[in-house]
Image (tube, rainbow, N blue to C red):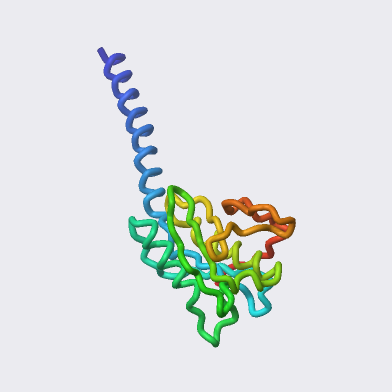
Length: 174
């Protein structure tokens, strides 16, 4: 009889340890929530991306989140050490969410950007918008025409992995 009680006690103890460990892991995951959303800017020279954590309230609607983050990307104080990745005078005609892709259409002025400005602009937008749940890619067009690379080929939808580390200088955020 004592042997049966000992075995039952050991089994209960094992179950308590197993389930108790699962419960503590669950609490750990819940407490590690994001603190802000990174909005990507560029340094004064326009050669590096700088992520800056902002207190942007993301909603359940991806379209609203895209518009909020694009608006936030344009807001930069003259006193800051960084500037918007979207150059002054460049207009975003539209930004529409379709499945997991955001389609951004720029005004014709965008085609006047040099290659470095173009790359930093695209990377900053992609890195900022792909933080939104269910957004994985961003495609770009200029006045309704698909954006082309330097070889004249369509760029297509870009994700975070579209930018090679050596070709995309990054700085730590503030």
